[in-house]
Image (cartoon, rainbow, N blue to C red; front, side, top):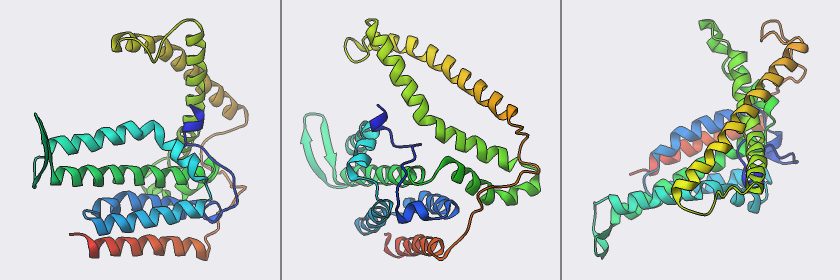
Length: 265
């Protein structure tokens, strides 16, 4: 399970994406999430696909590792594709068999929405794969600094988001251990009727929640014992430095935005 999980993990490497400022990568992801909805034809999706491949190549993350990380959400992407394929009744009729009808717009929307979903997962995963949780916290805190004028706990919010990302693979590993322990006691998670599989999940959730609360308590105790009292008066050991390559990344995402506006139908 851990080999298939890429979101929330950090893979140390020497690559252009690893050396970028976390603020630049965060801004790139935020902008990408919005502008991907501008794509509505083949040309725009080709441009977005080329940009995604460029980012993946810059990250130096093995392609097999990324493809394996998409497997847990492959069925969700496939479900989204068939949902649009069979329930969008617009355009020319392409295929008909009994009650199954496939229309041109249904096929187009199924492909486009599935690609959009895949691109979003890849780009957001690259952020966590190439950025340490500490760097993500520092980047978020810097970007959210203007919100301090409204008395918002910016440091605490950034820390919470970073800890959440960091504990995703930890919880997945804990889930894997509990599943193996339950399977050793005769529990079947992958065979039998759906009703029995759902019942088998209950003994899995209870120890997982107990373990999660225990980890949270241990983390809180460790932070208090080290004198953590929030963001007020804290100094930083690692200072973020914005360089020309970070500006180039933001310029590239802005060029992508302009291209999508020009090419979209």
